[in-house]
Image (tube, rainbow, N blue to C red; front, side):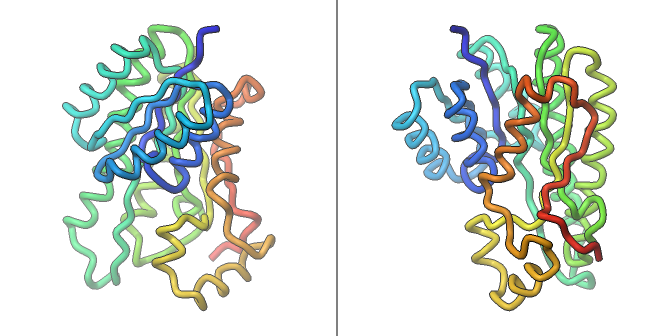
Length: 248
């Protein structure tokens, strides 16, 4: 059986790592994209190899760098010959007080979250289109739809633009590639829980109808669904996964 291949960017931790493991459990060969922390990426790869009988590779890439993105795709195609699923999970947030927000903050956030997603989608999407099959899932955020956070207005703007990018890519790559986005609310990733004050977490949980943050695995399941044949007629959609949340 010819296994499908899934590329997940930002897969060394959090939602990306959970997504990589879930796709591996469903018999996908996995490409773990990471930017800085090779140790964490290698740990995810090792866990997958120990648990599932699939092939893996890890690739370091700054998704905002076109040369690195092009090189990454070449390496993947050399090993696997194709990419069936792309999960654009890599992203950054630079939260600062509005009065301290700099142009450099804004540019770095846009370069990674928006331009980086465009670049990976372009290079992967072109090969998918040649194969006349593929699915792209972009990680947006409720912050790009109806949650407002001036300390992260550059992040929020990048995610709103990412949703627009999703719509345009779904048209550009029709009819062969389905392009959708997942917009999580609060997610209990390790980094998120370390950075947030306990009282703030409790306050935010009261605004969520389910009264808790999502587990990364819960977001991964929605991503997998959108990539699967069960979602074969879902295209150009943005799926909010926020447990039901009062809007700001």
